[in-house]
Length: 340
Image (cartoon, rainbow, N blue to C red; front, side, top):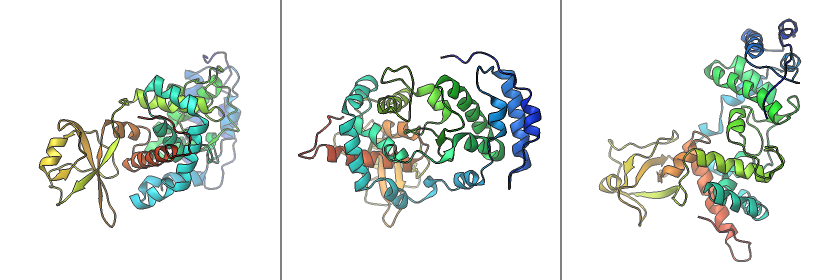
């Protein structure tokens, strides 16, 4: 669905100039807002979106700035894991897999991604839709676009994408809520990802990442496939380390890296790997610090999960939750879902 038609956006400049400055609102917020309206009036022509009024009423939110400065991924692994890899969340994941078995199997057939991986991503992101975010998306995106210099360019683009998305998917901009970073729906897609990767998996003519579990499932699987998911290949494996890891061996902690170390190199350095893996297979070596450090091998699919959220902690939580969900789904007395 294209973005067509016209709306006169220049009057927004005078309207925005009269907007009252909110408590604590920095001066650059108002300047950035006015510049953004000028850019949008030159670049896009909207059919029905009253952009000047919408942006004039976007509120600066200091709590958004505070939240983005303390992301979950800044926590140590043992605390991060305790938030997401729990028996309760695994149980809800097994129920989600049971209730959505048809869509999950169809997504695996279409995109090659196992049901438990798609399910675990939804579990980590929003607890299967239980926590979709309480921030008005327009507020969060405008605040970060105009008052958070470290990533202002990124969030200006996301604000633009959100306004375009609102027309394409008939969203009510003033009522859409999401995360403090403006992530949307059950899979918490940023607006640009929503536009690029969301799919209409239930065939109703819309890509609904709030109300349609088939659309949600297909969209997550599509995202992973387009970022390089390798069907049937492993995600991660526990590594055994009997001696200090040589200093010249690249080890990553929170920041993901592409798998470039041949397993044979790790074996030669005293790092044990799972049996049955090719010595030529390339991995990353991940250390998760704790009272006893954990070492893991990250394969290509582990790196693909970090494209969803650029954190080894995130990808490991998804992987470990997926394994618990799969185990519960295959227990006697439960409806099992075949999986890779």
